[in-house]
Image (cartoon, rainbow, N blue to C red):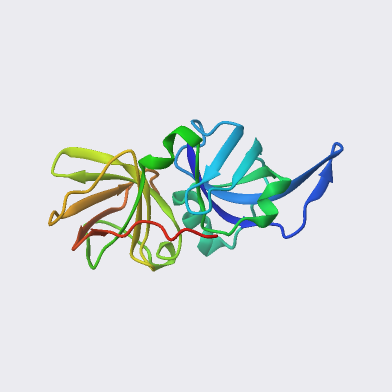
Length: 187
């Protein structure tokens, strides 16, 4: 039950007497993401997810696959979202300490990975050998990994498999030189 805030409107709109903020998020699993209160890992700010889903995303043909593999969905957030930074990771409060941030240096692609995906957060599962370490997101352009409920041992090559597939082929990456960097706290 976590998501990354990708985009949000700058001003709230009024919907059924309540001020809300239309937003775009990347969810690890739309089925596991519930309406309710979440807290930002970096900022500590709270936001309420009022509604998830809809048909508000229109993408250029070359971006449709990227939107799909990134599990990008529309969401209606509480008015508090106006003050939030994009790329903030949100979790339910009890899981805030289970989120880790890593960077990596080396990368090799075993299967199909299009350049258009590089700037998107892609929900993925993380493995060393056959051992699953956890789930989270990867963004190639910034060489970042967000890991939920797990940790990556030092000096190990990490295999990453995207959670969603395109053309029945999941993307499979091998990463090297991974180090935990934590989050900069926004005050």
